[in-house]
Each structure stands twice: as C-alpha cells, then as structure tokens.
Length: 458
Image (tube, rainbow, N blue to C red; front, side, top):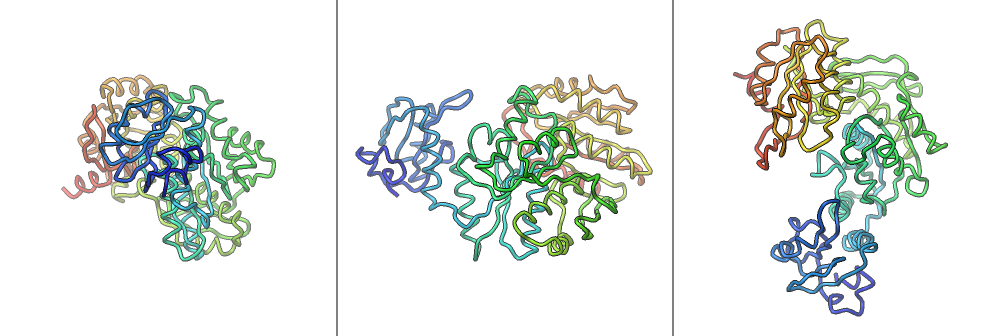
C-alpha cells in the first residue's frame, strides 16, 4: 500500500509514492517494507531509533522531529502523529470488521476473565480469541501490533467472532485503544498497583474508567464487590452489576467451583474463590452479546484453568502456581487456600524490580499474616539489587509467619517443597505463566511450573 493511501497529508509529497507493507513504532519490530513512526514517549523519542529502523528494513519514516536518514521522511506536528499512526495501522491491515470486541480492565483477573469469555464463546459455537498477557509482550499491544492481531484473528474465522482483549490502564491512558469500539466492557477490580506510573489511586481509577465511556463501549459489566467497583458502576448508570454476595449455592475446591447464576447451575473445572468472580463476569459478558443464560451455563462446564492462574501442579503436597503479583492478588490466593487446608500454608514470592516500590512491604505484611511460612525470593529484579527488594518486602513482615530469604528462586522453591508435609500447601506466587526471569539486563529461562515438576520428580 502507498503511504499516501495511509496518510492523507502525504498525497502530494514524494514519500506518498513509497510502497509499504506494515506500520511499526518499535524499531526492533521493523522489517523489509516497514513504515516507521518515530513517536515521543515518556522518557525517550522514536527519532533516536530511526537508523535502527532503517537498518532492519524500514522504507519510510514519519516523525515529529527532524532527522537525517537515507529513506523518504516526512515531519508532521507532534499533536497529530499518534492519531496518524493509529489510522495507518488499521488501514494497512484492511480494518477489523467482523470482530466483536470485549474489553476487560481491572488490576487483577483480566487474563482469567478474557480466557473464560473466549472459552465460553467457543463452547457456544462462536469463533473467539484472546489478546493480552498470555499472547503479547504488553498486556495491551501498541496499535500497529494490535491491529495485526485483530486482523489475523478475523482471517482464521469462517464468520464474525469475538476477541476478548485485556485493556490495561497504561493502554487507556496512552490512547492505544482510542480508535476501537467495544461491544462489552468488563471491570474486575481496582487495587494497589502501577502507582509508579499513575501516582494516585484516583488517577488509576480515572484511567480505567475511560473504557466505560458511552461512545467507546456499548454494554458495561461491573463487579461491585469493592468500593471502587461500586464507584465504577456510577460511571455507567446502565451497567450490569455483579457481586458474589448475590450468588447462591457457592462451592469452591482446589480445581472446581459451582454456584447458581440467574437460576442456572454453573459448574466449572477451575479452582479458587476468586475464580467464582472471574467466571461470573465472563458469563455476564457473553450474556451481553445476546447469548442465553441456559446455553452459557452448559458451556461453562467446558471451562479449563488458565496457565499460571491458580494452576495446580501437585496434589500431595498441594502445590499451586499463581500470577499473584499485587497485594490484593496475593491476599486473595492466600486467604482462599488458608480456609481450606488442614496443614500449613507456605508461600514463595518476590516483587519485580523497577516497578511500584510501595507495594513491597505491603505484600510482606499480607504474606506473613496469612501464611505460616514465607520464603522471600527473586521475581524479575531487572536493574535493581535483589537483596534491596527482599529487604523492602521483609520490612513489612510483622505477622507470625516463619520468614526466610532465599534469593535464588529455584533454591527458594526447593526449600519450600522440602519443608512441606503431605497435608501442607505451597503457593509459588508472582510469575505465573512467565517463562523467563530478567536480572540486570539478562533474560534467562525460568518457568515456575517446570521447576516445581523437576524438583518433585527428583
């Protein structure tokens, strides 16, 4: 496609006649035929990476700052370049007609809810896909990648289908989904996280609330189990509100839940009390698409657990890998398991480096209060000193738990498994589905589930 067909302002310029195959804003993603948009970010500007983009195959550049390069370039106003990039991203893939979008936002539960929505849709005979933490490097991809993913999903379907998209607060604040219209928007919860970016919970809430603007989302489904949820429901007076307190016949196990929803029994092969909420939200979201309650209830029987989300790796002792990496997430999983175990609760976790530092002692307090044994270890320390992160977590450990610090994550897991009796529960928290660990600029393979299995097999 010619650049002039993507950007109206280039129709009479030489760059307008350049044939391009894709749009990119990350120079590392550029390949032969890329149109590279050099856009300003929070701490850097894409203009510094133009030469890298060219080296990787970019054939034209759109930028808001002057740059000297060997390929056709156009300089456009800073306040226009982002919208130009978004429009070009969707034009070059041919649009995403035929995709019914469900956006899921909230601090915790986005991945589980999106996956349950997609599974329910498939069970109902509706083509479906997910985009989020399990499919992309970012929870919500940048517009060029998101446009390609949406188009790719549609091209695999015989007819119109559903994409359940995790919508992060960063994505909403940065306008990554500004051009999209959602048939359904889902709110899970709002708890302490990302305050290094948003600074206050008010700002964090305001970012999430953008998804529920009437011009952006047709139907809203909001969990009102918390004050933030009750407040989000006021953003849309027509929102469908859900609360676990309104459910009947709730039964929760390590790998099964059941409850009655709108008069229909729901049975799902997933564990944990928090998954009652996640499945409930997924059911309501699919109902908002026009599906019947009875059909949804039947489809719920086919639900399977999501990788790294309350994933049972062993049953004796019970070993669970969970992505809980926020105070609320950790509290939920520990509270849930504590009321159902006859033995001790042993938790292994750390906190990511170069991220919200305020939550570290908070998570230490939660772990030392709700667990019997706490093993503090590395998560993804990134550029920070792992010992510094561990000390911050340990500073909040004022509960009665026996606290250990073992910075090597494999050794920490091994120590927890060695401590555990057959009736104990070991929770490996924080990384969930992740397959790598980043330390001081180096990324190495590390999979909690694989490590647990390897150690148990020994």
